[in-house]
Image (cartoon, rainbow, N blue to C red; front, side):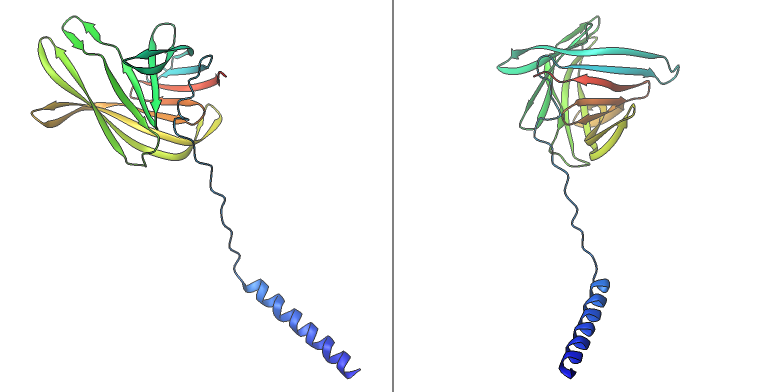
Length: 221
């Protein structure tokens, strides 16, 4: 009986001791990392894809709708580009190893010309505060100028709600314009801030005059 009572007492004592330790021990929770987007997933512009946007004028609050369709692709200077068409205009988009490029055709207007060229508008692997730039050769009423487009990653891996829908792993890029004169940068103005989400692409633009937001989209197979 004594051994039995002793065993019971020891058992209860041990249970109480372990219970106390269990309560006092901190609980360590390892958060599950969010899946990282694949390279070039911010440009899902396969043939048959369609994107509906809403544009709101900041001053008047007038609202317009437009659609961008990916009807086909093409080869320009040996590089394949998806053709995005709004009906009134076309854009040529390419992504290679996480570098997103826009092929811009030459602009020829009275007293103003620019040459065709490739503009890199997004690097999906650059971290927040990362920067890059592109130059544009301009003929302004016979005067040769060098335009400078400057880009800064202002958001990386964030969430953003656009017209009630939450997008994840968002990248925000601010684009500024400047002139390059005698090797010195002369800022002109901020053009806009663009937001991109993987699997969707371009979801919003904010600038001084308009806000453009995606309403719905369909990705082609």
